[in-house]
Image (tube, rainbow, N blue to C red):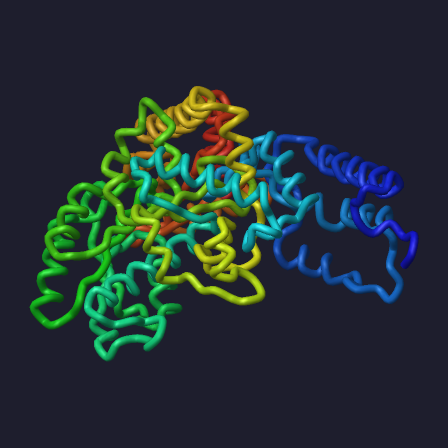
Length: 480
């Protein structure tokens, strides 16, 4: 292997080869953006058969150029384009250009975010970004946080800490002793339309789905606070143990925001923790016009903030913030080969003690880069544009014959259906995808199939929304 160009190093020949390969790869990416469609590929079964034609691990390697050529033929043409105006199905955003550059830096230097000696500047950058985020969401200097792979991991870590902290108050150390005898009585409360990660977390924590009390929503699809209190009271009366409530700031389907302040008051009254799942709606904090919609977010004991949704950063990028950073002690672990206690005494910051992961990417750089590049004013414009354009789409649909809307989103999700059967609406979504390369979402509510557009792209202007509506109307006629 001596002399073979394997890695980016200080050697000039390695640098030149890296630049050559990156230039070719970037060319392949740029060439793929040839029209405005979101998807130009095959239907699922045909794509699966097409991908299975080749051997993934050949006996003899093809070399970079041939492998890239095959990628250009086999994979890149069949990727979706989240930056397309024809892509509005999920909480899946395009990635801001400056953060694509940051992602390249992250990959090239391959820092491991567990110990300081593997990521000195990266560690300190993450600490400063976390400090900025805590302040942004109204937490004081006692707060702390950590980057995670996504909202599911952030929610899981927050709920795990909440459970262990709650049991610790009653003299039971879960880390040492496992679950207490009363574990089947522990209860967590969340709305019936909250993210599935709450139930998934309870399963992984050994408490099971039955520990999750699904609270009804009101006519605006927000958690019914009165129903929450009644559930808590009933649980206490029958010997169950409430320990946490989750307020959702931006439900996945409807973009609705739970009444945080009312839920917090109930948590205070009954001695529960409050976690706020703001994976979707957290970006509103940067808007002067819409920040008030997440008023009360600073009341949370823990907070999930996702950056690969409305913040428009490359996947993966999320964080979990704690109002009291000392609460990380419930997941901290010291290893003699990794994060020795004496290292911390000598001033080294080893982030592995705050994370459920060991090895992590330097995702904080993407936040740093976007904040530096855009500033508060630039970010406010982006968020305002997204929300205003989604409101425009809702108003158009709400006022048109032949359409039914469900609920006015507080962020940027618009749920609607074409008058007619559930099968008609399912056919519209598939027809848009297969015939026009347009991707919208689908969900169910009140026994009906609904279509969904989630606008996370500030380039989806009013004109492009009008075009999208025309595509939907045209397809509805085609499949009727």
